[in-house]
Length: 354
Image (cartoon, rainbow, N blue to C red; front, side):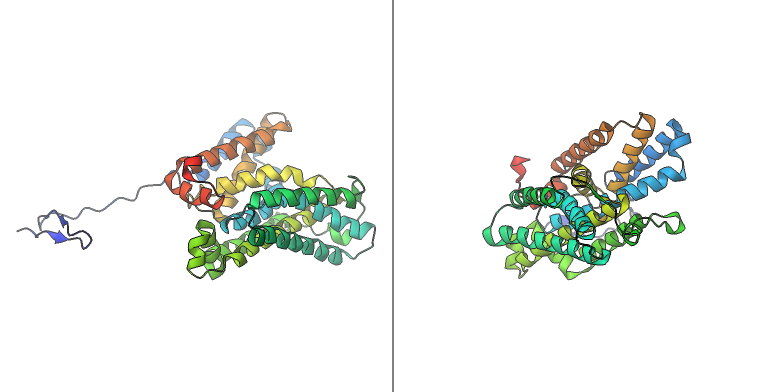
């Protein structure tokens, strides 16, 4: 006995009949290697470096160093990822880290502000930067990369002015430097702050209407606008998050090293961009996501730390490794059909230009 052809309901085509007594074939779940490749690479790094330099790599000191050192990178990257999700690329974050740290330090050192007042003022400067960036992108209609490169140059000038032509500012109240020093249960305080920021960013993007509207804006602003999304507001929110997280990072770096360094933000540019793009290849390929970003940050940090411990600690290792990782991530995004449709459209590129 056989079962007759079944109409699929779309094109009127018939599905081939199947004998009634033929057992149903079940599809075996297939492990998606690309989606979770970062997890496998991270495990390989840990095993490889553990065999290469076990006396220095497999220690609690190295673990705390990786967790603490990457917390600031992670905080900034979360903000950049959220801005990218709204379709804007904020390149002013690096100089905003420097400017916010110097502003916070100068207010405490030269103007005797209380630490909390200086922190609030620094965070407020991030809001002002976001509003300025959003104005030129939304109202004037300029490309976000061009706008943020311009405001980045202005921030550089402000940093130089506030620091008296690039001078370090140091000697802050102990209540300020203690922000970054505690290690409850052996976990660096900066790592805890990063975890909170990452959770809030994940919740915003994945579980709120605002997050869904931001992603719709990033995927196609015209279509989102026709669907009733206030795309200008989503752009502003993206810039606000990026501005606040980079300003917070500037404050935390200043507290961590007890010094306002005018060039502090320069070293964060490549790791943040690499982490954002590499994170978009993990868990949800082609889609910016916080979980992939967190994995990417610690994957890069582990790779760099192992090479530094095993290769003599040369300063060029960090830039070389992050640069290669960025090229690999962007190449993967360009070659992947799913990634091309999402990532590159957010940055204003077309498939034929990739």
